[in-house]
Image 1 (spheres, rainbow, N blue to C red):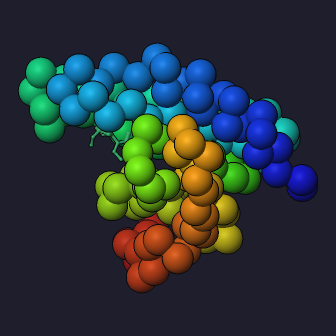
Image 2 (image 1 turned 45 degrees about the vertical axis):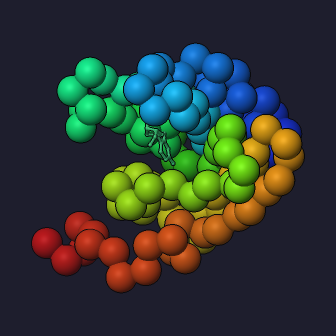
Length: 131
Ligand code: THU
């Protein structure tokens, strides 16, 4: 499948502007392209009880699971000097639902990009095969 990166980044940026991040002020948007070509987005949602914060990636994965689809690629929009990768918790969640070869591409508002695969970000993961 040709990954629709520009449509994904547009969806990620739209989601980023909806982020609820009054504590960190770090607004993140995630857009996941699914194997059927659809794009599902999520933003980070913080809480006054800080530990309850949910990252953009995990909210997007939740929406993918609800839709019954399978992730094919992930785009992240961040307002940061450098493109940022998903946090450790999100890597574990992404690895449960996306194949190791799935590409995650991160873009800053200035257009700088970096990309990794799910497998690169979380080698030796804990998975259901080990249960
Ligand atoms: N955050 C994300 O949404 N995704 C990431 O990849 C890294 C961090 C959020 C969590 C929190 O709301 C804020 O960014 C600062 O950590």
